[in-house]
Length: 393
Image (cartoon, rainbow, N blue to C red; front, side, top):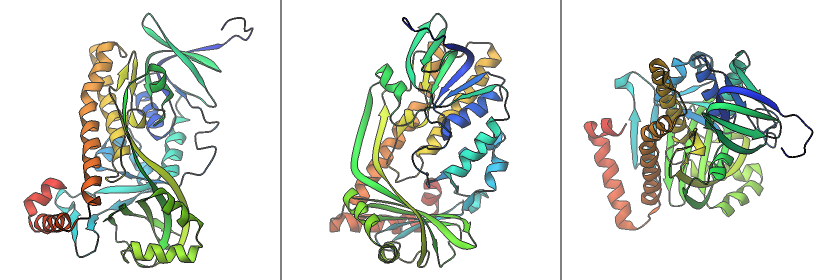
């Protein structure tokens, strides 16, 4: 550090996690249970967002539920979740829909929970773990490889670790530092995220309404003040959505009643509203020297399928199992072989979801009469064909 007289505190950790959001915090908690010394470096002053309250929800899949159960988090999380028992996929109008349920597997199709609730639960657990150290308000300067360690230099500390996990989101500093090539797509659209109460019981049904300008998802939530409640994620032109935020609540309610086609009755109260730009990206590889990328630092997708976060959890589940295997065999984590194996296990899953979400968006946006007829016929055919529906769901 040149002529600086300040002595930098040095920390030894087996695994250093950059980013303390949902994926990073769950990574820390899960790996601490394997006996590793974990450090979390978070740029925010506090684990929640400093600049705004995040009112988004996350849809937990059955696969993610299995992992959360395995690491001892699910019982605490499930209390705040509303299960999805049915999904209705609608092309333009309600008469043109696909219906899915998971009755034959005796499971749900997912679980809706507010991001904030989930983060609170994970951090309440993390704070009880002696082998996890959290460093907030931390700015990373650079990384250096010295022999078998990766050194993370920050404005506060130096961390010596065997493995770094980059969980620092879409605009990952780690990815930029290593100049990891990324495929990106800007959809030039935004998502309006709303939480609202409404007159009809959602009956644990999620709706995905496909319109020319993008999908509108209605996700069932737990009641608020004994009122039926749902979250809406509506993809549309950015300017149009920004203008919607400017109209008075009564007018916005009328617009939402029209767009939701009375699926959940009439809107009673809009509790929160936020806009997020829609972009997608895919790293050319999910690792660098002694570093692996998980979640949004590795990939992000169009929200059309609502599975981006679950894929981040799949990354983490696979990494967790891989570390257990290496631990059992007494092989060092963080080696080139280790990082490459992680990439091989996870890259195709992300590439496939990137392609599926992108193509789905393209197909449902097409508004030509012949395409609409083919889509409508396809939906009717799938709805009548039980074997085909089983394959899809």
